[in-house]
Amino acid sequence: MDFSAFRLLAAGADLSMAPTARADADGIELRMDLADDPLAQLDGYDDALPVLVTNRVAWEGGEAEDTAERLDRLERALEHDAVTAVDLELAALEGDGDHDAGRVVDHAREHGASVVVSTHDFESTPDRPAIVDRLERACEHGDVGKMATTAHSPDDVLAMLGATRELTAAGERVATMCMGEAGRHSRAVAPLYGSRIGYAPVDPAAATAPGQYDLATLRSLIEQLESE
Ligand SMILES: O=C1C[C@@](O)(C(=O)O)C[C@@H](O)[C@@H]1O
Image (cartoon, rainbow, N blue to C red; front, side, top):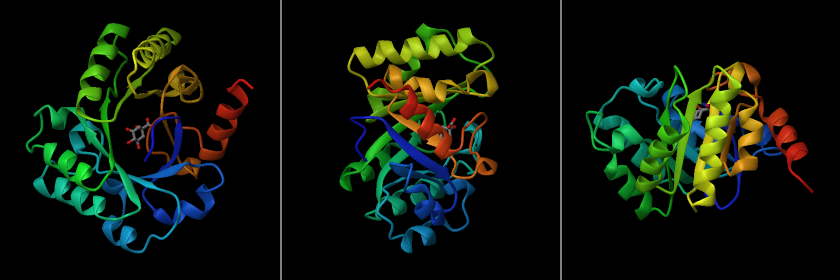
């Protein structure tokens, strides 16, 4: 999956969303940890939308246990031609988990897939230097460093947007967003500051994180904000 420009991904657990997502999405994020039989879904998937696979571990806000099998399933997913990117947690790559996720990076490279290295804060938003530091570490491990934090004020969003702009200007590829109601608008504004990836559910009732807009709404907001 090419992240040289902004990509809006339809985020969810069911690849049957693809025909509906096609009008507004550049790709799909398949949340394997939330999905029924994701590998079987991939076996039957023949849509043109490329897929980023995420198997979010429980200690980073997901539903997947921290086992070797979690990483094995990401590797199996990467063997499908439609899967052109994989998401791995920064903490799993820095050795905080029980299993070394580095082997999945190697598998992604063997299959020509991009690596999105993600980190989340479900309680707060650090200050700008701390955001920059964490995103720089994430960028060292993959093609895009991604950070999603929880905003409680406009100052939190400003810190995230400032970090996004600073790192983009320095030549890094980052994807940033602030979760929650106070951070919601960041999902439409961060791409203007250099964020490369947005996530939105086709059905607003199927959000994969707090404060997400539905796919059609987020596409419309971003298009309206983009300068001519
Ligand atoms: O990490 C991210 C970002 C996200 O949490 C969001 O806030 O949109 C949504 C998740 O599905 C994705 O894996």
